Every structure is written in C-alpha cells, then in structure tokens.
Length: 480
Image 1 (spheres, rainbow, N blue to C red):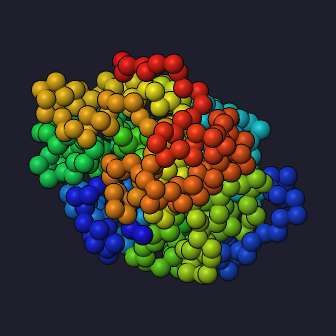
Image 2 (image 1 turned 90 degrees about the horizontal axis):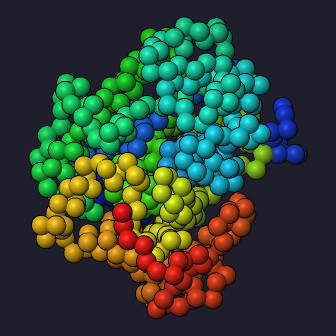
Image 3 (image 1 turned 90 degrees about the vertical axis):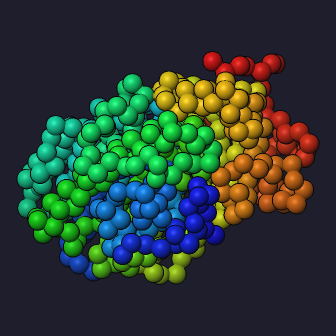
C-alpha cells in the first residue's frame, strides 16, 4: 500500500524516482556475508534532524531543492514506509545504535544518555576492524563518544575523518546534521539568506493539518531552505567519497530521526511524526532507482549493517536485516511497526502500531488536549494557529485536533485517510483489524518490558462507545 502524508502530493508522483563477543546472541550463527569482496563495505550514515518523509524531491515534492539526495535515491533504494521508533531525536537515535526500542534500554526520555552497559553496533564493528566516527549532533552522551575512534564537532572539516582513516581499514561514519532543526529561539531566522536558491513560499507544500496562510508558508519555506542546506552538505560528503576512491564500496544511508518540527508532526505518533525519508545506496547490491512500500523500522538498520559486515546481530535485537530486501532476495516482510513518545519537556506518553493499511495510537493522557513540545509552543506555527483561531478562521477540524481532549484510542485507515483526520476507533466495520493491532501492541509492550501498562487487558477497551485507559486524571487539564 502506498501512503502519503500530504493529500496534496499525488500518489503517482510518490511512486516515481528521479533518476566475537558476548554482545552476540548465544549460539547465534552469523548470517551469510552480504558481499563476496575481501573487504567489508564502508558504512556512511547521514541523519537529518527533524524531517518528515515528503520533504525531498525524490518523494514527489516538486517544490523542494534537494538534488544530491534525489540523486542518491536514483542510485539506490527509496523506502516509502520507513519509520522511526520514537518521534524524538535522542530516543530515536539510541534505538538505532542498540537495535532495541528506547524504553527497553532506558533512553525513552529526551536527552537521556545511552547507558554504558547497553551493547551497540560500535563494539562488533570495531572487532571487525572498522574505524568508527561521528560528526556533529551526538545526543547520546559523552560516555558514548568514548566508544568511537573519532568525533568531529560543527567546526571540524569532513576531510579530517578521512585523513585519519587508517589505510586498508573499513569505516563506519555517522553524520548528524543540525538541519532542518529549529534553533534555540524556536524559529528559522538562522537560515535566512544562507542558501543560494531559497524556496518560494507560494510554492511550498503545506500539510492539511496546518492552516494554509502566508505566514505559515513563509515558515515552511525556511524549513525547506534548511533541508536544502543539509542536502548541500550531503553532496560535499558524497563528493569526498568519490575523490578518495571509496564510493564503490560504501553503503550510504540517509534518513530523518523524526518528523518535521510542526504541530501534529515531531513528538507525535502520527505519520508526519514517525514516517521519515529513508534512502540506501549500496553499489552492486541495491538496484539503482528501486522503490519499496514494505514496512521498515530504523531498528532494522543495525542488523543490516552488521550482516553487511559479516557479523551476527546484536543480542536481544528487535531489528531485522534489510540485506535480502536490498538485494532482491525472498524474505518475510514486517507485519507491524511500533513507535512511542514519552517525555519531551512535556509528559505525553503515547504508543502506536502501524500496519500495511492502518494506524492505531494509544494516548495515555487523553484528558489533555494536544500537547506540543515547549519549543514548538513558542515557535511561529503555534502563534499562527492561535491568531487564526482568535480571528475565527481556524478550520473546524483543526480546532478539534488541537483544542479538544483526545480520544484514548485513535484508529486510522491510511489508505483512505492518509492525513489521519477520521478516527475509526468506534467503527464496527474495522473492529477486527483494530482488535488484532491492539493485541499486537499489547504483546510488543510486554515483550519489550514497557513501563506503561499494556492496553488490551483493560475491560473498557472492548467498548465501541468509550475506550478508557488507566492513569487518567479526574478532570481535564487546559492547555498552557
């Protein structure tokens, strides 16, 4: 099934492309090495900070200026349904390195450091001879950086890592861009005048869950400019690979760590918060210009990298290697994706499960209306929406989305309602699908030792009229 965050992007446009240790499971046998080459592949990871899926040209957004990432997609595989495990940056990133969901490794809270006792892909890669490094945004703690061979801050040139790369050794390099994240003032003033080809506010795509006003368009245009700046830096790194003769044996992965920094996107479990761009180029392995609609989690990246390096998966990993998918071999697709949201300067615990067609979200504080993060509430989009509301121009469906208590359970048909406006939780026609996904979510929460109570065991959950989760307060809390 092809889904689309923004109804304004034609589905047809989206389907086209532009052009050994104890870290391993006891008794676990190494999966077949992904390459017959004597040298294991290098791994370059490019991470956008706060970007939803549809803000790249290769995903059908014709207003975007992203030539380098569009070219990368044309040279590799583009994933239409790549999902993060958490709609917040540090929980999302830590889960990738550990191959486990953030609440299972103690990193569900924003800014929580990755515990030193949690195994990551860094250790086995180093045991294989990989030179490991990271640039810029870390967000996993200073102790984590000690695991790496190299760290470069925002002032360090990208050439430094390659200058220090020992001859003959493969590398793993993670580049955490600061774009397109908003700055400390919760706006995009820092990007004005910083790109050669700025986006035209009249042409940018405005998600249907935001009011389409000139002010909103100006803000989104700056968001797009930040993406363009990041795209340019991606181009610089990819050029370095070619100049150093490393491109042909390097797996390049690009993805967003969570959705765009706008209401109903980042720090939510809606599609705009967890469905991110994901592109993988693997010369000689992944077919150029290929596209997949399979459900994929960023948890799967660690298992993929380890198999490509000829190593077994991490012990307790929840991820599945994508090597067979990338190389066109028979494999069993994922049935579900799971995601979460916890503390992000506001407490709004949420759990979600996504299938090929449906999305189910459990709100553990339904008595509270939609909560943005504190930095979002001081950012221009909130002010724009408040101004529209006070003037009586805010669309009724947006008034309901942002200023009413939320249902404990939300259930959406992504095929017919990609923007998730019509909650079908009480619709008898989809009761069987809702029940199956609720039980699967319950089992995942139990298996991963979630600190929240699994929902499916509560008797009220069966009611089609009123679904209640535990932990509700006696009365509603107003928005600040």
